[in-house]
Image (cartoon, rainbow, N blue to C red; front, side):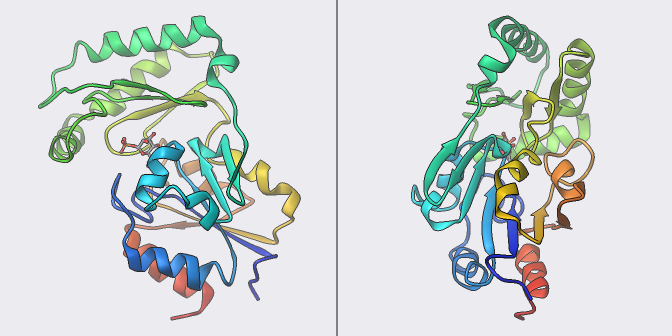
Length: 250
Ligand code: M1P
């Protein structure tokens, strides 16, 4: 029988609890905070930083509402409403390698033609760099247009291939996090990182719900980790159905 002490439910955000980069629906949020959190411990684990997770989960108080909020794959950790730990990609890689990656990425992106290009092509976060060919300041319709274009022309996959070949042996991972960008981080700083933070809690079972579970997707490692029971979901509605089945509350 699942209980808060024995069982942890971890949820990816984009594509799992919300449409990509959109705000969670009120009913699903209430379901998580009432029905689910009263039965098991609940955590969020996203590639995004805290600001984006808060926007999407409907408010700054997200860290207080959920038991755990693991940002940037869990390398930035909030527990019980407080920032507990984070790592610095700058200290880990050093300025020289970091600049080589940024310079290569900007050079590569300067040579591709897209339906639209806007601003904020490189977003520097505590523990990862997010590189975005269309530019993170694109509008929702420009984002949608890029997603279609990318599915035909494999813009991001080719970019990842080029980055992997250029930075082979440097211990960097290049992952297709969301819809329009590539996440760059030290190998091992994927979503399995968050499991280190809960090791002391001795959960008997850890369930993980995510949509990007294919190789190269940013849910792949945690979904396939032997310490979790992975659930592949296709939408926020599907997530709710699968959770109801697991908790036997339908
Ligand atoms: O789903 C998590 C991803 O969300 C955003 O992706 P995109 O803007 O490409 O849809 C980014 O914050 C990305 O870093 C993150 O992994």
